[in-house]
Amino acid sequence: MIKRIQIFFLIFAFGSLHSQNQYFVWFKQKDITKSTLCLSEASIERKVRYNIDIDEKDYAIDPIRIQELEKKTPVLISSKWLNGALIEIDESKLKEIQSLDFVKKIELIARTKKLKSSSKKSKSSYTIAEYGSTFNQINIHKGDTLHSQGFNGEGMKIAVFDAGFQRIDSIASLKHLFDENRIFPIKNYVYNTDSFYKYDNHGTLVLGCMGSFLKDTIIGTAPKANYYLFITEASGYESKVEEINWAKAAEVADSIGVDIINSSLGYTEFDDASTNYSFEQLDGKTAISSIAAQIASDKGILVVNAAGNLGNKSWKKIACPADAEGVITVGAIDKDGNITDFSSRGYNALNQIKPNVCAVGKAATCYYDQGGYAISNGTSFASPIMAGLISCFWQANKMASPDKIKDALYRSSHRFTNPNEAFGYGIPNFATAQKMISKIDTSNAIQLYPNPTQDAVVMEFIHDATETIKIDLYCFQGLIMSQTEKLIQGNNLLRFDLSNYARGAYFFKLTFKDRILYKKLIKN
Image 1 (cartoon, rainbow, N blue to C red):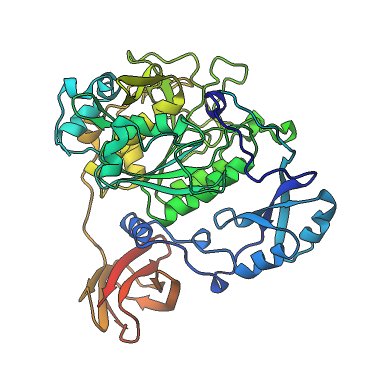
Image 2: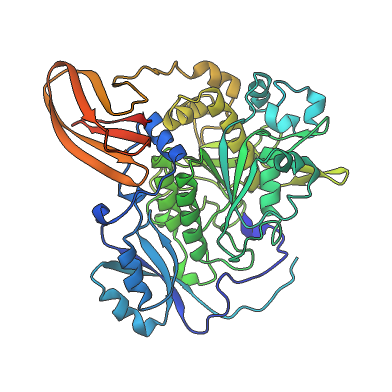
């Protein structure tokens, strides 16, 4: 994918670093009593809506650990999800790092070297004419039926991880995103600068597949969505540092409440061949990016990733993080529905179905500018075409859990009963998926009243047996109260005094023996 796009710039992320190498230091288990919860209100609301547990990965690393590590060597990046930090140090000093009592293990990420510069190169319905060159790549999924019902991604948050977004602030079909304040450059992890609109045009093409809109000329798959941009990929080199960038970006995306991540990136081989992945390691549990992608999926984000463009190469197989079980891995077809020769094949090393679905990646229309369409080939573009349509589908079924969205997506695909290593489940049909998705039960087993409250709140719910449960109360800074309650069979009434707590949003977490439930509360 990213290795096969034209390269315009080469800037090494951390400069010229002599003989020092980069290592990832994995920490021992966190003590969350010494940490803070790092989630936004939007992120917590997503977890509450879908009953997704909050765990230690949502807590910051104990700052004392980072401080102790920085006494030995500079910390380049720390990751709460991976529970560790990227450092740069001479190999001879590794024993000093390993001697720290909170260090679990140390993994070589990249042997650094000095690099030389290189110069290698909201409308509720639309007509077919208004789609222009994008109609076929959307209609093959009946995605235009979502648009015609008014579902065009409005209110959805899509994070885009890529190598750069060159000129997106001047592309004609992306101008509306800026005019309507729906583009948010979040973090450039590679070049350590606030600049987003140079370096590489791969992300420009990717974003255009989803966000493009120009009257009577082009419509992307999610023209009304909000887009959060992250530069995680370096154009001029391949190392596992990029995977750590990916993981860190995913953490931030989760923290700000993103719904979907599109990643048209993949990793198997690196400049340092000793760090390459073997096919046996494509199990969704080994590669750093795959671990992070699975965590993101577990936390309620729909992660959409390109399968890769190695189907006609010796490797043939998918890359990481497309191997993660929870990732929606997207292969490439042409506009007639034929699989392309370059689309990477599955399955992963655990024989789990990959790719999961397919979208147009041959002669895909990406954006419109300067009187013409930008056309490109690759699963890099099949992925955002699918991600945008998924955002529209989820907008139409907002109370559906991420797993229910994926289930309907896969079941609507043309090879669902006969998947294979090229198509996976095949080509989704969103008109079918919309009919298929079952009615979501939006009733609440737990009632809080009054809500909002000024002082006390009563919790009421019916339980089918006697049981002792744990009840935790959180604010956005973390856990503030924890107690156990013995429930009776039948109706339970519990009262909580909140008079000493500040105004704001809170949520209860109830831990039963077989499930965890959340309930949001507002204190006025």
